[in-house]
Image (cartoon, rainbow, N blue to C red; front, side, top):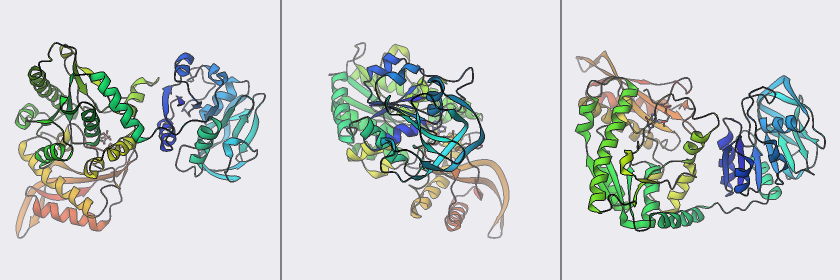
Length: 515
Ligand code: XMP
């Protein structure tokens, strides 16, 4: 294991993902994690991440400086370098020339960290502070025209770089991380899909014993992979619940059921509660209220079904009822971060959770995985690409893509438009290149002319974005031809929409969904 102590950089998770790409297991912990906790993990090495603060600020995030003397190799990145310099007696101060973006670094010393790298490196920098004086025992290993870019104290086995090796713009970043993890730390490359699947199936078997588990399916990657893994462990004692909340995409309710049963062999209970949800949504226009209504209703429906299942299994009241959730590692990191979960901009609802009196115990088979790793596992489990490559779809579904009130008619309109957008994006071979692509129904009517008739109908916005993780996104520069086909098909095939616009807002400042 490589332990990454997080000082709050937006790139911290990326460090873990890069390291896992070469099959070394790595975990992200808040920088304030106690030394004992870090020791318990028996790390082969420790990485100190970047961070947005200045080490000399009074409230600067700090790790226990004793990690620097734990006896395992340490790599400091950006703020991590400054932390090392500051705590070992050197000097850090605001830089005369801040460095953001591309930079040229010259390697000035031989060190195992730079083995095999060219002397001039193209790197990504993002810092306003610089190391001015190095602590005793440290040597300069790399520099830019303006500042210190790398230092090392090989006797103490501490290395640090000012630039970000985890960012793709740093061309030799992966080699540098490999040099650290494999050569310097001697970490094992045993974090493979087969290993993960075996270990998880064995763990779930042991946990659940002869109990019974339920799982809410959304049709998306995470819940499906979680269900398949658990089913591999306990077979038919896993029941999957798939709810039609009335705001799914066109034909999704029957299609997902079919795939889950026939292709994945899952034991699925399908609940058609569309009308129940739409009745509750009547008159609701506030986005957060829509999410709450759908979240609460989902819990109510799920709860009813769960009770029926457990009663049939005669497991009620015994401590043998389990709930499978597709929680991913970024959520785990986020909720344990020192900075707390990042500011809630929208409340995200997947499976909400069941009432406390049900005493379901949680199985979270994916809680150590990043999204790309979930796909790798799914592929190893032989799951169809159609599920693994599915774009994310929000829990509250089309409800947050229908601005204003959600009605059955509007859902039907948007389903038609959405189907056209997705079909054309797929036909153009772009479905996997864009993060999400969909239609949004605006409660705005405008005048048009069709044939010789005047029309007065709704506007539909098309949204397609490129993104790595949904946290930031840019609008996708779709070819005009694709936009043209989407627009003319929607206007001619969807009665009730006579105007199509393309959303060219990035995130930030926009969000991906319109609500
Ligand atoms: P935003 O709109 O916040 O979306 O830029 C970021 C990602 O989250 C998805 N999203 C949701 N997912 N429940 C979900 O399960 C929600 O309420 C929700 N709102 C947004 C969105 O589709 C995008 O992938």
